[in-house]
Image (cartoon, rainbow, N blue to C red; front, side, top):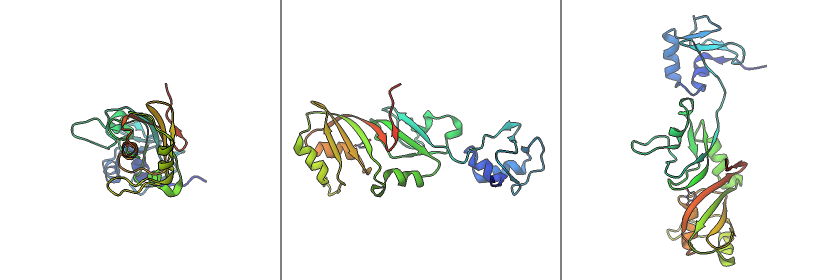
Length: 216
Ligand code: URA
């Protein structure tokens, strides 16, 4: 049987209001259930049954929103920035409370996920313990060779002492290679390839686990 939810929780779970704002809306009498007022914050509803409205507008309740997007180059993986566009600026108003998971550099494009919390999905996708492959297509200056692939597979130590887990590296011919990581350290692909003398000219994340970049 579907669980009953407190109205203030249902409103804040919609992603449009914080819990505090939801309580305020209820106090102001702007919330109705099935067309009737008299709704205190503690009132419980079954989300799929009662039609909840705020100022007459229906609230579309879903427990969680997860978004997978193709981040363009030139956009920051952040929730807000005073001067530059962020991934949240690319999403409609109802998704502004999400958090990007798995940072991409400003000039990197490709798969970026947004989740309702900073924790669960991030941990699941990024922690090496969960073995989720992050696959990147790199355009490089040069061509990777079997010694580079062996160095990636052995687990590299970067110039500042950062130790990387074993990673996949596949040459795609002159100027291109595919890199597979199971973690996400700062500028990791660029730093690993630079250390092998093959600087990255352009980088795209093709997939995070099952989430894949698709050409439209
Ligand atoms: N590695 C990088 O160097 N940059 C990214 O944006 C992602 C992985």
